[in-house]
Each structure stands twice: as C-alpha cells, then as structure tokens.
Amino acid sequence: MASGSEDSGAKTDPPTGDPWHWESERHIYENSWISVFERRGRKPDGTPGLYGIVRFRNRAIGVIALFADGSLTLVGQFRVPLDRWSWEIPEGGGPPDEPPLTAAQRELAEETGLSATQWREILRTDISNSVTDETGVVFLATGLAEGIAHPEGSEHLSLRRVHFPTALAMIDTGEIRDALTQLALLRVYRMAMTGELPPELCAALLDQRDD
Amino acid sequence: MASGSEDSGAKTDPPTGDPWHWESERHIYENSWISVFERRGRKPDGTPGLYGIVRFRNRAIGVIALFADGSLTLVGQFRVPLDRWSWEIPEGGGPPDEPPLTAAQRELAEETGLSATQWREILRTDISNSVTDETGVVFLATGLAEGIAHPEGSEHLSLRRVHFPTALAMIDTGEIRDALTQLALLRVYRMAMTGELPPELCAALLDQRDD
Image (tube, rainbow over all chains, first blue to last red; front, side, top):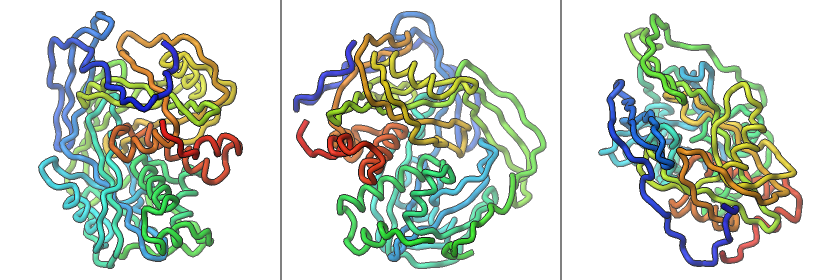
C-alpha cells in the first residue's frame, strides 16, 4: 500500500462498512454517565478478537465565551481521572435528546454566571474514537453579560479571565491540555485569521498585548 | 462568583488538590487496552457520590506527515465505537514506558509505509478528561520517504493524500471529526501562520490551489 495518490478532484467513497464480524456483546457496567460493553467476534483478518466499548450517555458541550476586548473566561477544576488540575473553557454534558445549544447555554450560566446574546456552533468532534462513542459540540458565545454562577455539587471551580493570545500560549506551554479547549481556541484562531468573525473582534483577538 | 477578573500579570495558583473524599475503589473490567474502575466517596459539597474511571494502557499517538508540496496522508478506517468511517492522520497507541517518538515512527510506518527524516513534537493533550485518563501526543513528520505499509490484523485501512487546505476544509464540512486529527491540523495551521515552520513549507501549506 502506498501513501495515497493525491486527490484528483473526484470524491473517494470509503471502501466498506464495519470490517469486523461480531458474534456477541456483553454488558459490563453502567453508571449515570457511561456504560461499558465487550464485543467478541472476528477481526478484519479473520482471527478472533474482542473490543471494549465505552458508551457515553451525554454529548460533551464546550463554550468559548469571548468578551469584546478579546478576553475569555477559563474554568479551572480538578479532573479526577487524571488526578490533576485543568484550565478549560466552560464544559458540560447534554443528553442526546436536548438541543446542544440549550445545554451550552445552561452550562455556561451554571459554571460562570455568563449569558450571551449571540451563539454560533463552530465545531463537532469525535473525542476518543478508539474506545468511546463520545462526541462533542463547541459553541462560540459573544455579547456577554455577567450574572451569578451556580455549579453542581460535584464541581469545585475556579474562574480566570485571560486575553486570547495568552490562552493560545497556554496550549504551547502545556498549561491548557484539555482537548476540547485546545480545539475551541485553535478553531477560533483560524476563524480570526480567515475573517470569519466581525472585524473588531478579530482585531481584539489577535492584539498581542501582555496580560 | 463572577466570570473572572482579568489576569494582572500575577500567576494564579490553582486553589486545591482533589476536592473529593474517596472511600473505596472497585475494579470492574480489564482488557488489553482499558481498565474500568468505580470509586465511591463524598463530592466537594459533602454529599455521597461515585465516579467511573476508564484507564488507558496506552497513550494515543498521532502523526501529521507533511510532504514538501503541502500535502499530507490521511488514513481512513471504520471506528467500531461510533459505528462509522473516519478520515484521520495516522494514529496508534504507545505504552507509557516507550518514548512517544518511537511509537510515532512505528505507527506511521505500519499504517502508511512512510518514514521521515525530521520529527517534531507539536502537541500534548488530555483527550477525554471527564471519564478517562487518556493522553495524546502529536508529532509533525517531514522529509518523507515512501515504503510498504503493514497494518495490524484489527485494522482495515484506506489511504488518501490531500493538500493541507483541503484537510482544513474537511473539518469545516464535518468529513474530519476525529479530535486528534482536528487538533493536529489546526495546530499546524497556527504554526504556518506564525512562521514556526520553514518558509517554503509555510507557503506550500497555505497555497489555496484546488485538489
């Protein structure tokens, strides 16, 4: 197999559906957020294999809330699975039957107290597709007004407002490691560079002043 | 709680370590890729709670392999947990005691047959930190030479070579949904815009010709 011939304009259809042949699926575990299954069958090469699948009850929602001056609010919290602190955009979960925008508005208000007059979906993502079916939707919120935050009992949050170039630099230094946050920041960077945002906001986002 | 006062140059230390009080941890499931645990204890607000944690045996490795003409190789494969096809950069897993670069070189060769003379780590990421401890490392590989691919038995791959702006557009259209691939492409876009890559490569990456 070579490294791929360059596309010649024709759209290439994916060759197949699922190349595994499944024989059984066993339910292993369930809580309010995930369920775990183990499937057994034959791999694409015909040999026996198994696959552990983690299904998520909620879709991940991220909100990059940009102020007119080019700053944004980061939420800091301890992430139990990694056993360490993480600076992130406001994030939460929304059930599949709820519009992602409704979940985004709720999570932003709960975690930061902010409300916004303009909302725009800017990215859909498959977060960890080798093992999970978790998907994520990222929104850009502008036209912000401050209010009172009311986080859930499992959340112990800290808030911090940083200028956009500072947040980008925090990816480079490893201070921002959360994938959904990195994606939101880099997606907005590209929107600013390609003029997909209002000119005044583009200028504010790319202004290299010190924080 | 307000939406965060703007940083005034002083670095804010995260306020706490783990705000949960854990009482027990139960091992639920294990296979060659993941293990699942359930912890019980008290939430930050003192009420009883539980937390399901999925631990990954390997770290995720992604390689964005750029040719001098500004094109890159995408790998297409069926992703079982999502039950659909996915176009991605070459990806794989590396055990924690193996240098990420070694895993990256192996995965690139296995999936595409490519080898590279220059390697550069461009991103570390926490992939899905609400439930898992999965981390990822992304490398940029340049100075490419073609060879013979030899994918694993569980892999049924298709290769496609596209120009960099085409790959970016595939994020916008939803054809590229894998988070590690989206991160790699957007990170390289920013590196090209800020001159972090050789000038000829920057020019080739940003050249808006049709594929």
